Amino acid sequence: MANPRPIDDQQLGAYLALIEASSLLRHAVEQQLKEVGDLSYVQFQLLATLGDAADGSARMTDLADGVVYSRSGLTYQAQTLEKRGLVTRAPSPDDERGITVAITDAGRTVLAKVFPGHVAILEDLFLAPLSRSDVETLADILSRTRDHMRRTPPRSVSTRRRGSAAGASQA
Amino acid sequence: MANPRPIDDQQLGAYLALIEASSLLRHAVEQQLKEVGDLSYVQFQLLATLGDAADGSARMTDLADGVVYSRSGLTYQAQTLEKRGLVTRAPSPDDERGITVAITDAGRTVLAKVFPGHVAILEDLFLAPLSRSDVETLADILSRTRDHMRRTPPRSVSTRRRGSAAGASQA
DNA sequence: TGTTGTTGCTTCGGATTCGAAGCAACTGAG
DNA sequence: CTCAGTTGCTTCGAATCCGAAGCAACAACA
Image (cartoon, rainbow over all chains, first blue to last red; front, side, top):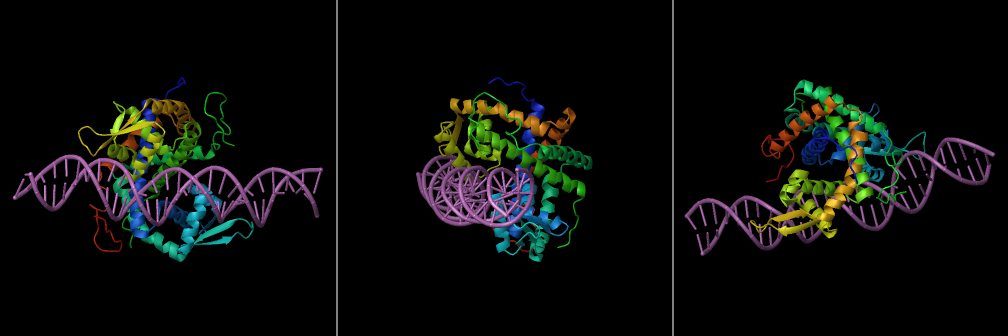
């Protein structure tokens, strides 16, 4: 039970601030998206990702990874978006079992309708109290951890420590 | 529809990095919490908040605000935790309609069991690629936006722009 | 080519989430 | 004191979410 190297307050503070800030921001953005475009945050992320892609399309798995989302959850949202005509889904040409999702014109329209308000919230809520250099620094630091986390193995497979409690039943 | 002042790439980058980094970190932590203590992230947050409180207790509403959560969602989780004996719930002494939630010894035990692994993930996944001063800077900047967001009105009530679509029915 | 293992996606069941509505306890004005 | 309005929490229904299980298409290898 001993705590080999307890994290210090500064580190804990950074962690808590990260979680809280992202939660608050996300909640605020969620409201706006629902109001203006009847979109959930995930749906928006998906549309935005597709909108950014060179050909406006991507495979399901890549989308899920990009958005940090479960596959089943993505299937659900993709179907929802398809019903609303905001995306199309078709088997990939080269891999018969892959599904290529593509944004439609209607999808781009919704995206365009939602975007200004989205940006407004970012300005007012997130960026307002930050200086130019704050933003630059923040982007740099967060990008670094993000990339590190993306690179690092899915956990509990590699760094599995022996002994102690915790069934670790999983499979 | 015009975009009065499109956000620049740096700002967008900071925003995306914030969302992605917190998502990735949260997912990783969620795994560990579930494995070791059978706790969801919210449940952990609640226990941790209570554990930090001077008297190990708090009102429902304060908990919900602290964790950025809906009231109904909190009710659900509090009931779950109570069933497991990790917290107790009792009407507040001074305000008959308020509920005071308090962490139990069992709750503290679970917290202690989960904590080392939690910290380990923070170290390996989040803090590893950051220098001491990075962490300091990050904590400072994120605290500032967080506080700003907490201070700023619930949105769409204050900054309500006239005209355009979006029912904005709310009250 | 046949076999085995992997990968990509969906379906399923159960858990979690939220907002709206409802109820009880407080508060303030008359 | 009495009434209208507010506040704190819960219940309800519907939407969303995840992991496990299942299925089809690929890949590697003898």
